[in-house]
Image 1 (cartoon, protein in one colour):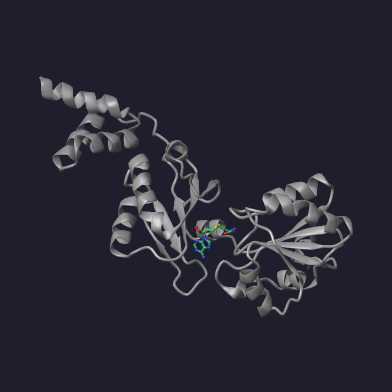
Image 2 (cartoon, helix red, strand yellow):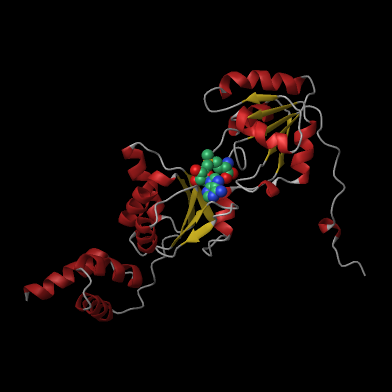
Length: 296
Ligand code: SAM
């Protein structure tokens, strides 16, 4: 009996590269062993490789003995390079686009070239490879059925504040990229908008020798990185905001919970926030009830 459904049988690969085709090729995010045999083959046979940094990619290509010419394609020259690259496709050449690491188009140049190639009816094919966002997500232990990707947050204060507020209300898991020297500042900002108990996993140096993942709450990871200076590359996986529960808890039960927390030493404001999250009652309502009690 044939146990493998036809659609799951390994397919006979078509001969690559095809003329007039743009290949978006994933390269390792640290571990050279993650460069796939298909990626190696295409990177040795295309007419041209467009890459962010010719010196950096040159080192990777040397390891696979690719002699294909390189052309720089980065955020400062992508507009001027576009017509040159489309002309190669027009002449039935094939192009591989790679970034410094990972999947082009994910916080790396690529999107515009793919759009231009598609608009001019050239074929675009992805040779999948590692991506820090999905690699960190699937090992986070946080829900991965539905998630959002934010990449790097904007630096401009007004945009950043709005983005942080949106992220704090998001009920799906959110993926964020950050550099080591801004990590603690971002964690403090997230703590302010999401609360220090929001779940988080931070993956550092994925696929490399010093890979590690640190969690479980924002409070815990801030403590950790205050003791261990952040070094290397970081991807943050932030748990989503928990949906408010139906108000199954009675008003008096909710107020009892609030008083218990305060008697245990929690600040009134923080206690009201926690009980609001747990019971679905509004934080301000709980807080006002505390004052009513004090006024009596
Ligand atoms: N296109 C890439 C991808 O598919 O992963 C992302 C490029 S983006 C410019 C670079 C950021 O990705 C880093 O600053 C870091 O936040 C994240 N990153 C890349 N490699 C990583 C790694 N090995 N471990 C953790 N995060 C990584």
